[in-house]
Amino acid sequence: MKKIFVLLIALTFSCFFSCQTTQVKENPADSPAPVKKGPTEITEPESVYEIGANETKIFIKTDVPGANIFLNKIYQGKTPLEIEGLIPGYYLLKVERETARTDLVENTAEDLYLIEVEKGQAQNYYFEDIKNH
Image 1 (cartoon, rainbow, N blue to C red):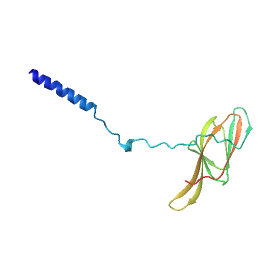
Image 2: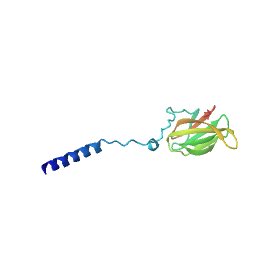
Image 3: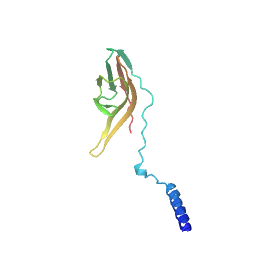
Image 4: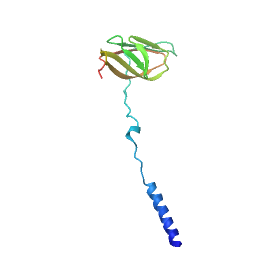
């Protein structure tokens, strides 16, 4: 009886330790997609002028009118564009323009910029030579 009890304890420990060392490999399909890095330097405005202390305003122009403007991935309109009443802080600005269009494919060019909107300032931005991607 003593031998059976010792054997049973030995099997229990053996199973316990072998179960603990089994590793489940992560499915690559479940892994998060790599994060695309945006710009790390702040794009300075071409010019700045003072407005009301609690107001904000940005003007955006491009060398080719009609570029699509996005702030933090939210569509704002086409250039030339004036945006008022933004909360002061940092914004990811995307300038996108159509480069070619066929019935099946729409090609665009885009650039990303980091801008800082500040209280009491109207900021003018001008972008040219938008890259093809």
